[in-house]
Structures are given as C-alpha cells and as structure tokens.
Length: 343
Figure 1 (cartoon, rainbow, N blue to C red):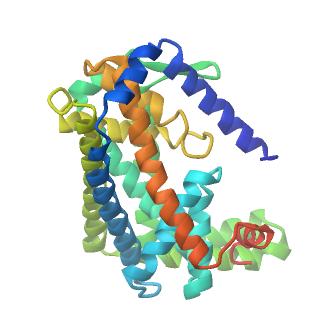
Figure 2: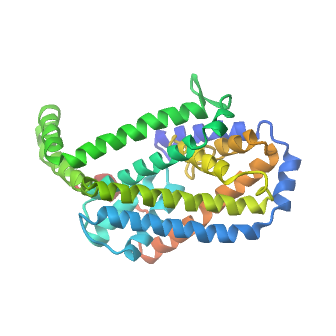
Figure 3: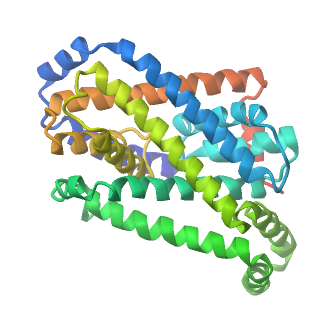
C-alpha cells in the first residue's frame, strides 16, 4: 500500500465511482436491489466456473510446447491467479500464478508470463470483437466520457486505443513466435548495447525463456484454437451477465448483444489502472452501456453492482481456498520470489 501505483489506482477508481453516484437516485437504487431475485445468480456462477475451467484448458494448451501439464493441475493455479488479481494491486495475480507454476511444475517464470500475456492479448482481441459487432449500439455511447487528467476519455476512444494496443501487440508476438531466431538476434543486439555487462547474461536467458513461452503461436492451427477458446470463454461469461439480468427482470429489455458490448467495454476499461478488484473501472462503463440502451440508471447501477460482486466473490473465495490448501501465503518470501522472477 506504500507504493505510488496503488494510490494512483485508488484515485482513478474514486473518479470512476464519482460518476457512478453523482446523479444516482438512491431510493430507486435500494428498491432495485431489494426486489431482485438473487437465485438467478447461482446458475450464473456455475457457468462462470465452466469458463474458468476453459481458461485453465487454454493455459494448459499454451504451456504444452514447454511442458505438458494436465488441466486439473492448472485449474487451481488459475483460480489463485484470478483471486490475486481481485485482491492485490497491479494485477499481481498474473505473476503469482507464474510463480506457483514454477514451484509446482518447474516451468520458468518468464516462459509462463509469455503464455499469460498471450492470453491477455487474445482476450483483448475478443473483447474488441464484441464491441465492434455492436457498432450501432456503440454509437449511442459517443457522448459518454470520463475525465482522466486533462483529457475526456470516451468509450469510443477506449475502443480505438484498445484496437491499436491489442492488435499491435498480437502482431508483434506472432512475428516473434514465427521468427524466434531473428527476434533473439535483435534482442541480443539491444541487450549488448544498452544494458550493463553484469546483467546481460541473465537478461539474455530470460529473453530466450520468454520466447520459448511463445512456441504455441508458431502454428496457425494453435493460434486459431486459442482464439476460438477465448471466444467461448467470453461468451460463457456473457451468459453469466444474462443470468444476472434475469434477477432484475431485464431479460425482455436488454439483448444478449448488448451484454456482449457491455462485457467488451467493461473488460477493456479494466485495463486502466485502478484499485484492487477493478473498483469503478468496471462499474461506470457497464452502467453507461445499459443506460444508453434505455435502462433506468438506478436499475442499471443495481444490476452492475450485483454482477460485479457475483464475478468477484466466487472466484476470490475459490482461489483463496486453493491457496490455503497449497499452504501458500502472500508473505515476504513469496513477494521476493515474485519480484525476482527467474533470477
């Protein structure tokens, strides 16, 4: 909590939350929460855990060129990672699961992180696909903006910036995977000219392990498989949105395509640094999508809050259970191991 990044995230979350509550009719909001049928959350949670299992299978698939690890071994580590993202700042859960995988299966952290970054890139590409499939609905959000520093960031801006970032990253990673020797030569050139002599060998080793983690992208079939798996994962998560929608009786007012747009927008927004659990960066854009679709602001706020809690609590509890079962504690030793990586 002493790190400046944590407090910047808290500040950004506070700005987003301000836009959530500034015009909220609190009486209508509490009424929406009180009248919801929360039994609908249960099938939503079940579907979400199927999506988490699919995420574990995707990670197993990406890791296969490095080491074949069964999905049932990967699943608890995946849950711990998502718990870490929800509880610790700066998406520490991503590094946490790479560290745990090294402890359990001796997979180098650099190679694991390469596969995790690939996951995130494909997730971003699918989220953008969800957004651009709903261009007509996106046009309704043209005037919705949040001030970030000196700029007003609209949801359309977020989509454009996200497109450049994720498609650019995908292109770079695909090229690095397809031409590992050329990439390694470029890397060695920069390492030998820009870094001090005493860390060149270590940095070079990390780079080569990272490139090993991209091996699954060298086959077009593998790339297609990862992409299709990512689509299935996010469609399953959208089904959870749809089940929670029933809790508020909105199933006749909000289409599945609108929920796909909401899913895409909120997950692109959560790439913005924020307090742990994506507080505010998940909520404000999600409410904006629903309000633009004609949903009452108080009901949209109640739905988004319940959805956020339903997404956060189950996976956090399951991840904490697996972490405790493994006897792992977020202590100074684990923190040091996380910071040191493959050192």
